[in-house]
Image (cartoon, rainbow over all chains, first blue to last red):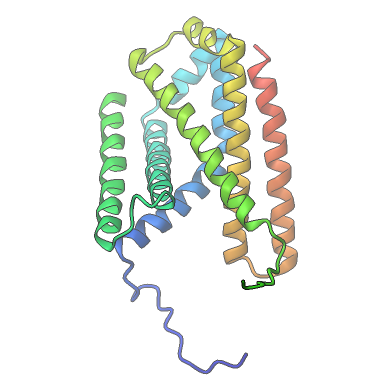
Amino acid sequence: MDNKRPKHLALHHIKLPLSGFVSILHRVSGLILFLVLPLLLLMLQYSLRSIETYTQLLSVLAHPLLKLMLLGLLWAFLHHFCAGLRYLAIDLRYITSLAQARNSSKAVMIVSLALTALAGAKLW
Amino acid sequence: MVNRVVVGAHYGLRDWLVQRVTAAVMALYCVSLAAYLLLQPHPCYDAWTGLFSGQLMRTFTLLFLLCLFYHAWIGIRDIVMDYVKPASVRLVIHVLVILALLLYAIWSVQILWGF
């Protein structure tokens, strides 16, 4: 196919609607979670294997930088979780109008960020 | 009646369904574990291993992890199909992801039944 129409893919000019923003973050957070899977499995292994590895893990995770990374991962999880629930609601036709789509996107952003902040406050 | 000729590999609907079923299982597991951690914010080693030593919890956790790996495979495959165009690179990434996830599954069994 020879399509001569101009393409406008200047990414910095395209302004995504909020639901599009939630959608791309769903993808990004999913990829992040996949990439850290071995680390999460390793943490589970260390937490269970013996009392020595358990205390070792806790002392490593007490480092402020690692706490911050853990909080970032927690956000990725919470965003993926909330946005995923939104998609399930869309599949079940609980969300059908544009206004509902926008409001639920806002809710996903707010709830995931608020829960992350709450966990952060508990973590410190 | 319309006789529609459906072409393609026919895995679209199945994967769509699998992604949602696995998501529901994972959501249930995460909410349960979060509830436990809310009730017991800092479990000591004995409490933590006690939680995971029950046969029911081990099974539920393995189910969760297997759902996670299947779910991740569908998601990563979709991402690769969208952004990676050369067939050879795509194939290599697919193979590596499948192998990694299979190894994670074996590792999960070793973790859960190895303490």
